[in-house]
Image (cartoon, rainbow, N blue to C red; front, side, top):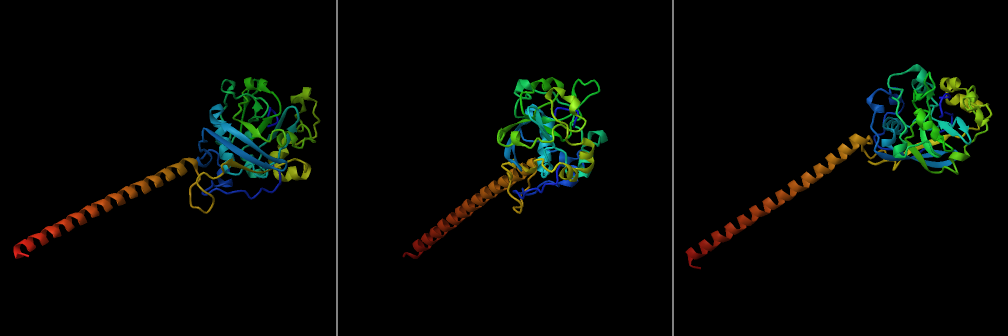
Length: 310
């Protein structure tokens, strides 16, 4: 969102697809339902493949639980695939996270206030190491009417190019940090268009050119608008969890949903263990019965032998 600190038509790549992957666009359109409400692991990493190269983001859920959960679900649903870095301001931030699909972006436009789309506010947690330092990743947001704090976070994300820790007190809450590719990829993103149209008054001290994206058009037309008017923007080929498929790849029949997958895996292991124990007990029980039967026959034979005087 242009007021805060804080897709193009690029073709998404054919990366590894996880078994039982979430329902994609249908669930993205309903952010208030269970499909977009999975709780993220306490720590996880996402690999971004881009037109400029790869970079990684490590997420710590304790820094901003709601923001981390939303990011996790967006990645699971392929939300970032094919989207562009539409705001790249050297010595400030780069920004991405508006869907290339206008129907999806309309849901996450905070002005529409769709159920479940706007994340509840969270404070920055520099006491936990979560500050807007170089490489930190957080949600862009609009300021409230008084300009005192960030609010109306949905899906727009920015990466800090420098120490912007003054944003902490405004409520821009980092949830992760770039772990590799910061110098070679993130800081090399195309920045020729400058600040977004109508947003130069936000940070006049940065003296950026203002030939950039019109936010209203970005939400209304999505990727087609960016591809037509801003073809030089770098884009995300795909964003995937690392490792990508904890419970197998597509076709293996496993469930990918984190909670359900773990329960199914645990249940499967428990079933195997119980079956093995039952089979072992059956084997030893049958063996014992055979041994008793064998000894009984020997005793009967000895009795017959004694009686016959053999």
